[in-house]
Amino acid sequence: MPFEFMDEKPPHPGAALQEELNRRGWNQTDLGFILGSKTTAINPIIKGRQGVSPAMSKALGEALGLPPDYFAALQRAYDLAIATDPDPAVSVRARMLSNYPVREMIRRGWLRDAAADDLTNQLARFFEVNDAGDIPHLAHAAKKTGYDDVPPAQLAWLFRVRQVARAMPVAIYSQQALTEALPKLRSMLIEPEEARNVPRILSECGVRFIIVEPLPSAKIDGVCFWLDAASPVIGLSLRFDRIDNFWFVLRHEIEHVLRGHGKGGAGMIDADLTEASSEAMPEERVANEAAADFCVPTEKMESFIRRKNPFFYEKDVLAFSKLNGIHPGLAVGQLQRRMGKYDYLKRHQVKIRQFILPGAIVDGWGQTLPL
Image (cartoon, one colour):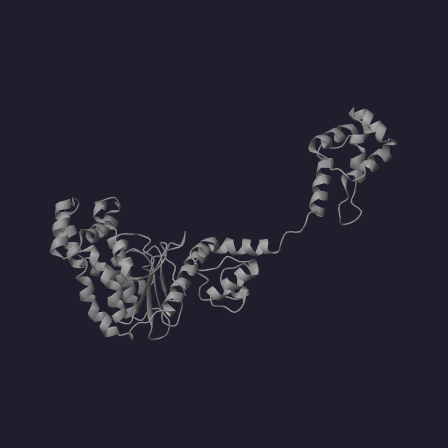
């Protein structure tokens, strides 16, 4: 008859061993004889001073007609019962890390490495809630927020953009000034270096323009939101360091600003942004159309495709780009998406981050903004 626990705390396996010996009328010397060992190997187990090894569990099982893991299971239960309870902070840190890239946020200077309670409070402040139970996406979050459909890593990126935006001084926003700035921005499409002027132009129009390096797994390209009814913000991640992606995403977000999209809500969060994405949402559709036409005039692009399809030679693409006053990388980007061939003339999609970062408000790539 197997040993049964008489209370909640499992006893040491030695108690079960002594009961098995009593049931058979054996003593420790008898068991030593069966095992071919001295009683000095058995007595410490019965007295609870020594544990049962896996080898001893198998030997005792053979000697007493019990399963080979019987005493090993008792030993595991006993060891677990007497083990020190883990620090409650372990579950707190695990919950945070399961939802947010906390270690990366610490590395980037968004949070300070600290004890679990302090880190939880920092996370609550980061997400602008008074109680840790209201931090979006955490397992114990007490209420729904406007960000429940935003993946945690994207949400952390968005709130960092918001933090930086609040610290930025800019001119009073003017929709007319931003509209009038579009031709000036359009004239910059031919030379990658001209992107350095973008932050200044947007600032003069009253638009807070911020670049924040994306967090790992945060497939976010840009965002448009409003700090208040007269304070638009454009945030870019530059996760694709290409001239065509930069101008497309920028113009997309500018269209959101011009149309007042995202006012009074979570904003327009654009992830995996392409000309064909999010077409079910009217706001995204009009922003995509404006961005595509800005980068490459739509009618001219359609005409070029009709005339050259299915053979798009490099010399024709270069001539088309020069005629329309754009860098070849912008035309190549649209042709790649239309053909589904993303290696087509890829060398023309030049990197642009090196030109835009020096003149912009930037958080990431080794830079941390002290807020």
